[in-house]
Image 1 (cartoon, rainbow, N blue to C red):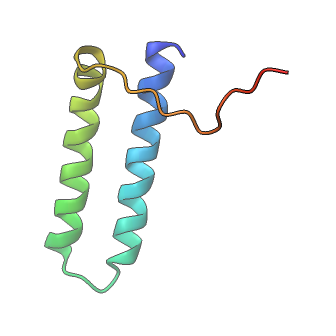
Image 2 (cartoon, rainbow, N blue to C red; image 1 turned 90 degrees about the vertical axis):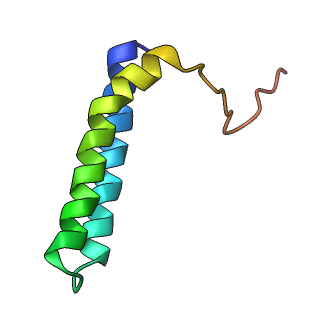
Length: 67
């Protein structure tokens, strides 16, 4: 997968998880919701750098079978 597409996909998943966490914290204080979004946005900023320098871990969903 292209590096840019990989980072875009990971960032989308990260921000979607933050959105779901914010929905789950509906009755929580505003500072708790703010902390979730602050951590998510900081993680989104660090993600391209981390993706570039950390090794890639291959986790196959289904093993490849040859017929």
